[in-house]
Structure formats: C-alpha cells, structure tokens
Amino acid sequence: MSQDTQPASTLATHNQRHDVKARYYRRKSRSYALIERMLRSYLRPYLWLLGISIFANIIVAATTGALPWFIQQAIDKVFTERDESMLVLIPAGVIIVSIIKGLATYGSNVIMSYVGQRSTANLQRDLFARLVRGDLAYVSSQHTGEYISIFMNDATRLRDTVSTIIVALARHLLTIFALIGFMFTINWHLAMIYTVIVVPMGIVSMRRLGRVTRKASRQGLEETGGLSTLIAETLGGLRIVKAYGQEDDQIKRAGSVVDRVLQFTMTALRARAAASPAIEALAGVAVGAIIFFGGYQSMQGNLSAGEFMGFITALLAVYQPLRSVANMQTILQEGVSAGERVFSILDQEDHILDKPDAKTLTVTQGALKFDAVTFKYASRVTPALHGVSIDVPAGQTVALVGASGSGKSTLLNLVLRFFDTDEGKIEIDGQDVRDVSLLSLRAASALVTQDPFLFDDTIANNIAYGQETFDMAKIEAAARQAAAHDFIMEMPDGYETRVGEGGARLSGGQKQRVAIARAMLKNAPILLLDEATSALDTASEQQVQQALSELMKGRTSLVIAHRLSTIMHADNIYVMRDGQVCESGTHKQLLAQDGVYAELHKKQFADGDA
Image 1: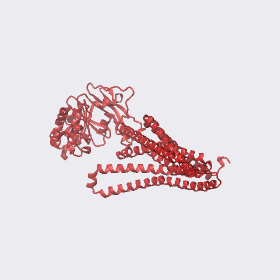
Image 2: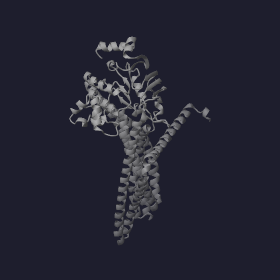
Image 3: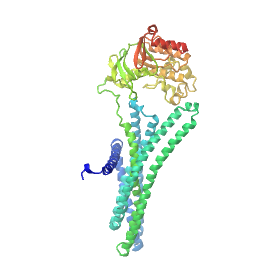
Image 4: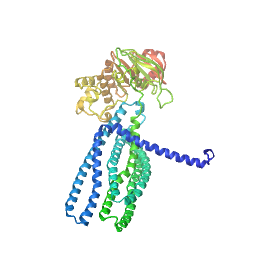
C-alpha cells in the first residue's frame, strides 16, 4: 500500500512515532553535545588530572574485581582443602588490595572534586563576564532573579552532572566490566543469566525515567528562577509592599511558587529514586535464578562452593556501581536542562561591538552632533526617536526638555552606545561613535542618571569608581564640589562609611551628590546629565547646580532637566515631543515663541515647581 492510499489514522500514528523518535534523538544529541562542550571548553585544561583520575579508577575497578577472587580462593583453599599457607596469604592479599583501593578512591574523589569546583568557577566567571559585557537590550530582557538562579543553581547542577558522569563512566562502568568479566571466567552460563535479565531491562527502564527527569528538572529550574525573581522584587520593593499592606499577598505568591518547585523537584526525585529499586528488583530476579541454576550445577559436580561464593560476591559487588550507572541517565538529563539555560546566555550574540578597525576616539574640542537619528526599541511598535538632529557645540551646554517618553534619555543612551541608531549617526568631533572603540568612547564622557546607583561599598570607593588610582585628596575635592563633603563627614566613618545595597543607607539627595562627585572626579570632556538634580531639595540643588556650573565651564554638556529653572541659562534648549524636536532656541527665544516650552514654563511656575 502506498503512502497516498494509507488510512489517515495509520499515517497519523506513523507521524507520531516518527516525531517521538526524532525528539528522542534530538535529546540524545543534545546530551552528548553538552558533555562534549564541557570537556572542550571547561575540562580541557585539566585533562592531565582527569587522566590521573581515570587511572585511579582503573585501579579501583581492578581491586574491586579481585575481591571476589579472594573469596573464591578462601572457600576452596582454606575451608575446603585446609591449605594452611593460604590462611595467611589470602587475608594479607585482601588487606593490601583494600588499602590500594581506598587510596585510589580517595585520590580520584579529591581530583574530581577539584576539577568540578575549578570548572564551575570558570563557568561562573564566564557567565558573569557575559552578562556584564552583554548588550543592555538582551540583559534587560530577563529579570535579575533569573540570572542569579542560573548563576548559582544551574551552573552548580551542571558541575555535579559532569563530575558524576565522568565518575560513573570511569570508575563504575570499569568496575562493572571487571566484575562481570570475573563472573564469566567462573561460569559463563550463570553470567549470561545476569547479563540477559538485568542489563537490557535496566537500560529500557532508565531511558523512561530519564525522560521524566529531564522534563521535571527543566520545569523545576524555571520555577526556581521565578522564585529568585519574586524574592528580589519583594526585597527591592519592600517599602511599597508594606505601604500597601501586601505582605500576605507576597507570601501567598511565594508559597505558590515554592509549591510548584517542590512538585517538579519531587517528580525528578521520584524518577531518580525509582532507578535503584528497579535495578535492585531485576538483580533479585537474577540472584534467584542464579541460586537455582548454580545449585543444580553444584549437584552435578560442575560448580565448587568457592566458585559459587566468588560468583555471588561479584554479583553483590556489582550492585552499587550498576545502580550508579543506572542513575547516570536521570542525572544527565538534569544536567542537560541546566546546561541549556547556562549556554543560552553564553551563546547570546552581541550587537554592540567594536568594529575590527575601530580607532581610539580623539577628543580635541568635544563637539557632539546628532544627525537625523532614528531609533526603535525592539519591544515597542513606534520609534522612540525619529529623524532627530541636534548640535551640541564644543564647550557649550545644551538642554533637552519635554514630557516623559519623548526620547530624551534615549539620546543619552545612544551617545554611549548602550544601543545603536537604526538610521542616522552620532558624531563627536566629526567621528562616528560606531567607528571608535567602546572603551575610548565611554572614557570620554561622564554620566549621572536620574536614579543614582551606588555599590555596596564605601563612599570613597563609590566616588573613585572607575579610577585606576585611589587619590583621597581628589576624592574629597570632588565631594566638596558636589556639596557632599559636609554630610559625608557627619557619617560614623566618614569616607569609609559603607552605603549599603544600592546606597540604601543614604537619602536620595545624598546618593545623588555622591554620584555627581563620581562624575566630577572622572573629569571627562563630555558631560551627560539625566535629571541629575531631580532628587535634591532646594538648598542642596542650589549648591550642586553651582558646582555643576563650574564643572560645565569649557566642557560639552548635554543636560536633561525636568525643572526648567536648572537649564534657563543653557546655551541652547531643544524641546522634545513624540521622539522629535519640536522647538529649539535659548530660554528667552522659546518663551517668545509661546509654544510648547512656554506652556511648560507657565505650568511649572504656576504649580510652584520651579
């Protein structure tokens, strides 16, 4: 029957089977690819150590296989033949072999622990570097809690998987071969019973359990990432949670996520736990059959008591390594799930990169120019900027004003190449920012954002952030310029006071002044100020504004301001609306135009906001 004439149900069943088989081989290839990549990328520097570990495991396998032989010799030579010379030699041999096995096991375990910890440290280092150097657009697409979960949980699980697989293959598999080989040397009939019953059925059951484990592990890791996200959000917004009385709601949400994590974890654990009993049950059937056939052969005079005891000893000894190998499939699937999440970050392609022939930015005057710039965020339908052209002459201060979402902050982000323009270009002294190195571009500018970020470090280290040398006199001078020195000296440890997570131990205005001091200390030719004084009270704002005025002298400054009073003396003001420039001119010229700027000015002064 041709395929065209087969019933639809038959074709559907055939396609389903084909899809199942295709998914299986894809999973299998990904498993092998994961191990291969870990070996190539993170274990290659330690191949010589792995070689020593494998050699130690060969010794473990050989000594384990020797013990049943000693049991056989003890029964036959000592208990049956009453050979007094063997009464000393056999126990001595057992002791020596056991000591050698213990030393080899210890050495292998220490080496594998070191290699596992070292490779995980390298993997986490690469993950962190990938996130820090990655494009903002990609890094911002996931919550920080997800990254923390991948960094801490997935990388560790991947390490455990690789270490376990290597030990299972190098030690346990060799031990299984040694013991089964010994069984065949004693009685191949009995050995065939064991290999026919246990091995094939064990492989089938382990495949099924592995599929369950992988799915549950992937879902569990995703839910763990969700839990990390929830914890980070709740702690970050704890004041809001309390202010709105949502403690119980957050606790309920966390409980739901914890329950889902528990559900998937228990599914994986049940699958893993089923591996050992499955092998044990199969082994029990094999032992029963071996006792029957072994007893029958003994009655026929074809099997001595020593041979039978040696065979049974080998059979019992093979149980533990066989159980470990049986668990290998389920553990491997857990590692594959973790590895997919880890390497999805490492494999992410960056778009904000230096060109192969990128030159160092040379700032002679510091003129900044936006030439017909258009830009659209990937998550939005309409462009954030559309055909924006702005000139910031060297040494002058140009201000950007407009409603929220008009594109002001996007312009600053494009100057530093946090994103790249879709159309048009941005030039500094005639040099396209995309043609120069990122390091030199960002070294030529200082940025102060509306929401200042401080590291959980000392005030001095936060001000000196990015500086190669630690000059306390310059740090203090920058703090004085930013009107921060007085409140810093009132702190318990002065400049050595730790600011807490995100600067939580400082007020909003204090954090802003420390951030401004950091920009002042950088002493860059181009200043980018994104509502840098918005968090300050009137008295502090006047002090900082005076310091900023001194800092702006002779420097090119692009300033975003909400309070129009802070930019009234700017050399030029551009009014933004819906991603375009709708007005430009000096403060007086814009008021005379009686347009958008004049309306903003009237509203602010009427509301007492300026």
